[in-house]
Image (cartoon, rainbow, N blue to C red; front, top):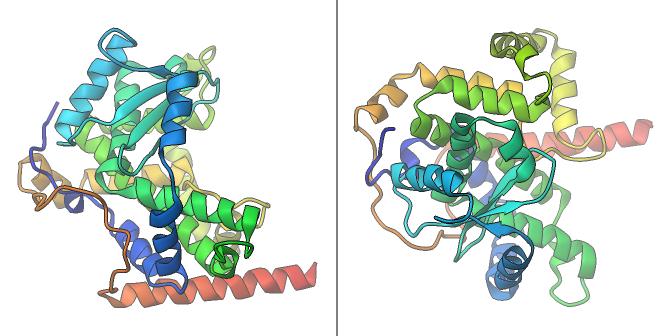
Length: 321
């Protein structure tokens, strides 16, 4: 497997991820939420829960998974090594969180469903989130929304700042962040098919009927999904589905869309140059900055206008119901 010594997350970070984060940081209320998060968020209870209710992976505990994990950590040049936990849960899922002590949780459903090559892709994907500093923003979004819902204006005044626009921006960024993590998975595995089959299986794979699932058919489904955009009405439906028209805002892009973006990048000159060792190096290590950053291009303003347009469209639909 290729190893990318000293690689910076900016070497593979998807531009849509970068733009969405800039737009998020520039929204009113973000600075306040960032300050309160740093002031009040406590990470330790989560680690206590995981230590008490899951299996921590190590040399003598899930040793095969641990070896795969160690190799992924090495290949993305992540230090120190995050903790890895296996949770008893039949749902095929995994996630990365943590600020000072990042960690990854992978469900037993994922381990049972996927091959070792696909497990490598999943672990590399989650490590990509850590490498890119996504975990602190994900944690911040979860904390801000739960805090605003639970205590509102009673203590911190958070309810005044967690606006619908800010919530939308957090979800928009979370979806775009997945595209960067997918690139990390491809870099580590150097095997596009294993990354795509992991997405296919998590979307609807079956252990019993695994031999009846075709990656090529799933790729064709991805192409058909992209073709839906030829009808402008379908574009609106996609937009609304992602942003809560079905009752819940989606934190991940659809797998068929992720495959579309990843296949494009796999044939790009940028990807080929990284594989040759021509990539941006990290300049410093340490905690991820959660302070406000000044947007540097017009795309940020464009995304903010889209947020405002979305809110107007949602309000219009609600009035017409």
